[in-house]
Image (cartoon, rainbow, N blue to C red):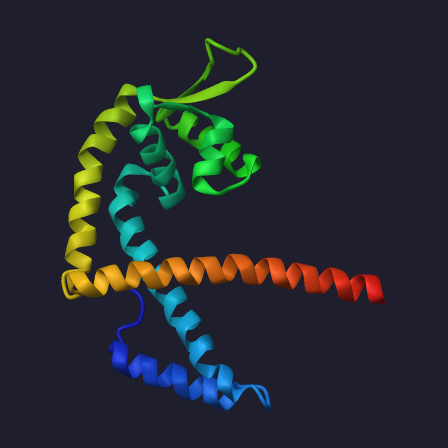
Length: 186
């Protein structure tokens, strides 16, 4: 799975590569860029481990997440647009995910009894039993992967990640405004 290089050596390699490649005058940005590199690497490792657990069931991580969203919903069903909001993905992506899950026998599309224009994605009995079995497995795996991180570090990590998410959200808004100004000025 992934690189066999020890994390400390890999960290040193990343730092040295960033120092060699930093644009002139941007050396002060190295720690920020290094953090993002390690955040992306961590995300990739978590996805790789998750995919190994899900592969025997023929599920991608995105499909599994959609199934968990439905599993947690009242009556294990939700309108498609609500799934998209909860997963922060477009309607097109949700449609494609549900199409694949429907072909695999994981979900069914049903009309909403209160408004027949609304399509509900509903877990099948097969999906319910599989997710009921997979969920504790996934949680145990997460516990095993994080066993060398203290509870205090976990809480701090959560707060840092939430701050990073907020910064990325606000930063992307700022970048779009800047791009609009530059486009309008030219």
